[in-house]
Image: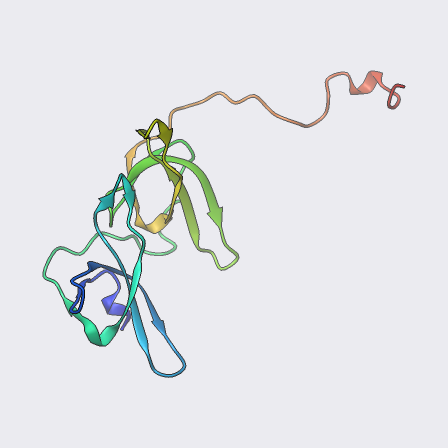
Length: 157
């Protein structure tokens, strides 16, 4: 069953098409595939939709390149990345690591929609490929000891 991950499938009832990004097996024997469309709508990825496996059919086409878990370096903040499934591109503005080791990154698109920035979109790091490296930035330390801490004996009133 896991060999279907990354395959392109179509729902025979609605015609909805996408890449198999997850497989759910229920206690009652129902198996559902999550399909992620490869296109964007209004500049953002379309939500994953879930279907019973019996109503899906394979679609011929090139499987997206998705990295292997544990072999991908974390996305570097400030780098420009592209989701290999939807083609969504943006700058990495946040990263998140779960207790089970899953790594995700939030991408912020560079363009505006209706005069406002798009909401951040979250992706598994293994689905991302670099578009441009992060710019080298000099950072100023924030927080930490104050430069005049030795001169103070306590709070002033």
